[in-house]
Length: 185
View: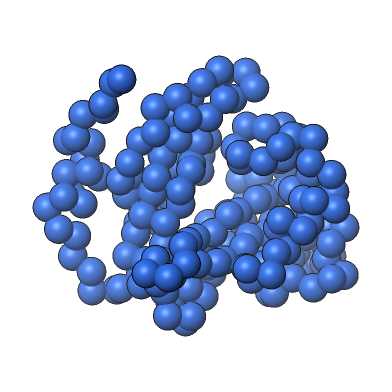
């Protein structure tokens, strides 16, 4: 597998990956009826760099991710990414490879941390992978996502430092261990 920057020629392959994920409505807060044009404009937006994971043997797109600043201004030192893997490539290490690639790409671009703002809690494979990749759950948004089958489920805020020598402070450690209780309204 090779991971490289996406080009205009990848648009159909990217749509072949992101279209079914968007239509399923289980992991992203995107309109399930989003058109191909709208989805590609989002995924390939000017505010982000988009990459594709390609099978070296046949050139098939296995996955795609984008890298961007999580916020503007004082928050621009924190990266954000979104990842999607083709259904045919699930379980083949594509998401792990894209995440590892994105961590290094973010470091190279001067980002100090990476944050995922809205990881749907029922996306258990992704949550486990992000934790194995060094991300901590630093926040839980109760019932923030309307899952098409599960109803209202929690969304997680996940974060990790990109500093290889980072030692988390007491708050980060406690948040990662779930010491803080959920607030019920």
